[in-house]
Each structure stands twice: as C-alpha cells, then as structure tokens.
Image 1 (cartoon, helix red, strand yellow):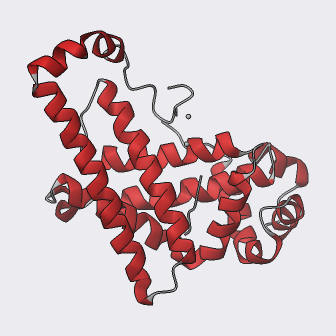
Image 2 (tube, one colour; image 1 turned 180 degrees about the vertical axis):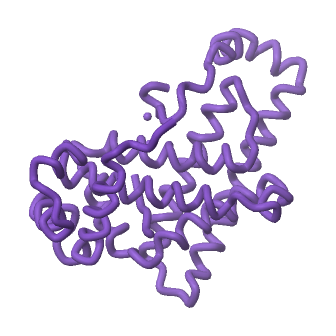
Length: 234
C-alpha cells in the first residue's frame, strides 16, 4: 500500500502551524499562513486539508496517535499486564502531546464547540481504539464497543485534568488516571460476574442476543459508524 502523495504536504503545513497555534488557535488565518510558510500553493493546501483549520487540528491529533503506537511497539510494553498497559498507553499519549500543551488546549476548545463535537468524539474514539488494539485486546462482541466507550471517557477526563494540572511532573494527573482506570476495571469485573451468574444470564438473555450482533467496524470508524478529540505532537 503506497503512502498518500499529499502526506508530505500535510506534514509540512502542520509543522509550520504548530509554533503559532498558542497565539492564533486553530483558525483559518493560521491555516493560510502555515501553508504560505510551508511554500504550499493555497489550492494544494486546500486539497490537503479540505476543511482547513479543522482538518489541521485533526491531523495534529492523529499524528500523536501514530507516535503513541510507535512508542508502544516494544517487548516491554507487550509484557505488561492489561491494566498497566492501558495506563502506560494513556500516559505515553499525553507525554507525546506535552511539548505542545497549549495547542492541545486550543484543540480541546475547538472540538468542544457543538458544531465540531462529533469530530472531537471521533478522534477520542480513535485514540481509545488505538490503545486497546496496541494492548492486544481481542474482543469481538459488544465488549469491543464498551471497552472503547469507557476508555474514551477516561481519556477525555484525564486530558482535561492534565491541562489544568500544575503539580510537578503532572503527578496529580497520573494519580487521577490511576483512579479512573480502577473504576474501569471494576466495571469489567462487574460484566464478568454478570456473565458468570445463571440468574443474571437469564435476565440478560434478550439484551445479550441483540448486543452479540455488534461487531467491530472497519478500522478508524467510531461510534456513529459504529466515530470520538484531541492532541498530537512531533
């Protein structure tokens, strides 16, 4: 599979934009200036990012996901237990974004707008999917959906906490993340106990029959194609 010929252009524009995001936000003015600084023709820039600044912010997020996947591709990560894998992956994702914390803040504000909230939700979902996949999750039924849904919530809450955390080394953020993941694991244990309880299985027979039809969608799809936003760096 060949790379998209526009990838180099997209990366050049994003690199040119990042230093000015803290001052201008993810704006159309920023997008146009970044294209000019990268010596990209305006029409070509629009082909690379049809929605302008919105697509540029999304590319920033997805770059961070790519770098996270690369960072997690180690024997040490694969040897961790599942809970530790998820916590390590979320922390890695935020540490990758750390050099551009203000750009993350601006992206969070952009994707919080009602008009762009679905895009933000899709991006967060992609991150949760990337984390579970890197961790070796093999769920194929409704658990595929619920795991990503709960982790999307944990990731979004942790990012917001991280953005406001002034503690040394973001220590409070990592403690917050640990507490949230403990909640997730309790939820997973609850699902398992319901599955193992004969009376609960009987009560859930109908809902489970419906939920069992849910299958993981194509890669990159989120809850609506079931598509959930945030940050990246370089």
